[in-house]
Every structure is written in structure tokens, then in C-alpha cells.
Image (cartoon, rainbow, N blue to C red; front, side):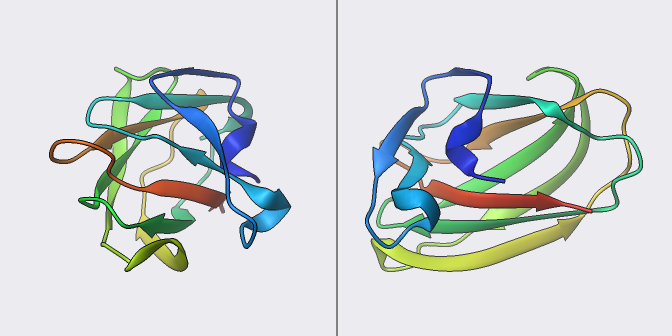
Length: 121
């Protein structure tokens, strides 16, 4: 699914990037921001992956169950990829949950990274 198809969030915005899937990313991500995906259930998932880019600090994505403060199901590290339009896939094993998917973003100061697409399986 497209990162920018979030249904709730705090601090994040849609960012245009021509080489991104659909031409946009979930962007302007800073420490503590989050995005929720009401139509994506965490029930039965064991793997999370995302296509990301970063000319900022990089950081981590916390995969959470039900809300931005819900149970932590897993964490994936996002490296600096060398540019906002230079994409890389990151993935992690996660523990299944039961509610809608929420992503919480952690890292240093300023813009951390963008999320182009995400996959749960």
C-alpha cells in the first residue's frame, strides 16, 4: 500500500517525489510523528517491509497495534539512503496484533526519512 494513504496521523504530510510509487511519499517525518492505517489489520501479520528514502537523519519505524501508543509489534531501522529520491527496502519480523496498523517514527532532529510503500504479510 502507499505510505501516503494513511487515515490518521500527527506531523506527517504527503510529499511529491516523481520516482516514488504513485508520485508521492509519506513525508516530512520527524521524531515522534505517527501515521495510522485503519484498513490494514495487524491480525496474523509476521512481516513488515517498507520502501524508504532519506537525505535526513534516518531513524526507526515502530510497528504498533491499534494506536500510536498501542502494543509494540516490531521495529525496523531506516538508514540514510543518500537522497530523498533514492529508495531502499527495509523489513523486519513482527508479532501479530489485532487492531489497525499504526507506525510511529523515531530518530534525531529534523526530517528523518520518507515512506513510499509498505507491505504487511
